[in-house]
Image (tube, rainbow, N blue to C red; front, side, top):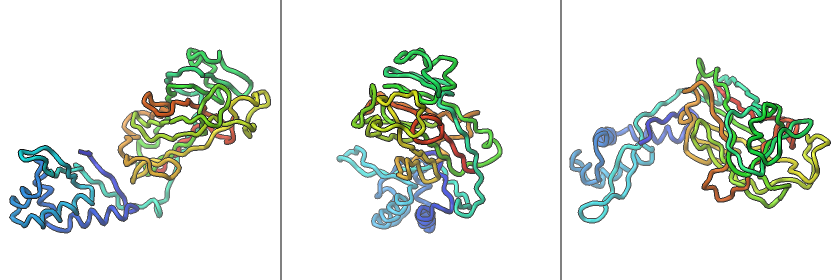
Amino acid sequence: MQQSVSINLDDTKQLIRIGKAFSVEARIEILKLLCTQELNINEIAEQLSIPASSAAAHVRVLEEAGLITTSLKPGIRGSMKLSEKAVKQIEIDLSTLQTAKERTEIIDMPIGNYVDYQVEPTCGLVGEKGPIGEEDEPRGFYDPKRTKAKLLWFGRGYVEYRFPNNILKNERELKMELSMELCSEDHEYNLNWPSDITVWINGIEAGTWTCPGDFGGRRGKLNPAWWPDKNTQYGILKLWSLTESGTFIDNKKVNEKTLREYHLSKQDYISIRIGIKKTAKYQGGINLFGDCFGDYAQNIRMIIYY
């Protein structure tokens, strides 16, 4: 059972579904019954002294509102449909992002400021003026000069960052966006080299983007002159968004996890992990670009709307 769901006035269709669900006393009574047990349609009808057809219609409305779920489970005479509560609590915020005076906190995280990592070759770090440490040596990611890195890459593994969340001590988050320039990682560049790149926020998977390749063939717009033409040159700027209605990559919904489910203010920082899952179909590595490599003059950027 999902513990809580948060919605606001922008979630118009869901508000209508929830309003419809609570507009009939029998549906409220069904929710009361399901607080302590799972029941089938006939059991609900019997306990409320209503026809089974009416009970089925009420259950359907509650399902459409996301308040209960119905699933097939083994019974004495084969399987039966049992209904159970889907959420414990609903929080309705009577505000709208469309009219609220939004404020933002913008945090620019240098790519060398990771706090944890686990990487496998090919891997390396470079700064604006040259390499940092030894190429293809994972231990080099501990080099003190790593904070000056402007491009990093690895074949497998992850890097993890911790973003400050001071603003959320006294403010309520409305939305969070995370953007970065990325591509796959082959030995040099390879336009046909897919990689499933995943972002985790506070340990919760926030979606995977399949990058089609390790991009080169033309110079990145910002690359310093010393960077060889044969190497990776640029990435694609990707945007992860957490909202009250779900999680999005470039405005395409990738899962149903809402902003509240990432618990952005629960601890003293927001953890961002960027990596390749061990079970990923395409384990093609990652290039992560800073503000003077690739095509975009930015590091990892977090915007908190509050």
